[in-house]
Amino acid sequence: MTSPEHTMVGILGALALGLHKRYGWQVVAFAAVASNVPDLDGLPMLIDMERFESGHRVWGHNFLLIVATSIVLGWTQARFRWIQRIGGYFARFLPSDVAVSRESPPLPIPTSVLIFVGIGFQSVHLVCDMVVSGGQGLSDWPVKPFWPFRQIGYVYPLIPWGDIGPTVIMMAGIIGMAKIGRAQFVAMLTLVVLVIYLISRSYWI
Ligand SMILES: [Zn+2]
Image (cartoon, rainbow, N blue to C red):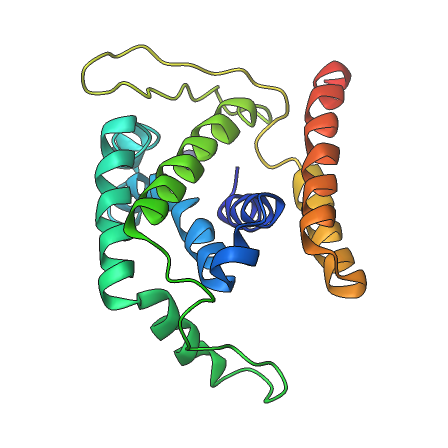
């Protein structure tokens, strides 16, 4: 999956679980960030494509790093509230009628909840990468969740990488949510449609 798609999976997943009702928009933004963390191993691409080929979907896409980064992200968010700080910074560039609160969420988000959200959504990232893989001349890219202890890789390609379907479905869900509200219900419905699309699309390839 691409970064915008991982971001939308994080947003929709957190809304579908109703986390926003208890912990505010901050936990939704946190889930969106966590959903992208495994792809940090793609950064060497900026320096050297060969390093990208050997490292991408390996050192960031495993449970060891997922747990470590979730602890760091969760602890720093609870301590320094970087989601609110970054949100407040970008709010300055938004129209004045779009309010982004720098206030604390309705309930303070416990560090343990943040770590749990981090681990959960990074794990969902691995599943998304396993089912969206290959196609268009690209080879399948197995995910090695137990690296560096075990080298075994997993991939279950349902749709090719770059397929526009998931983006269209999730964008439609988010636009629908903005129009009609009922965030939790619309997010749940969108994810159900996405899963149905992934499964049925695998039969068309
Ligand atoms: Zn990935």
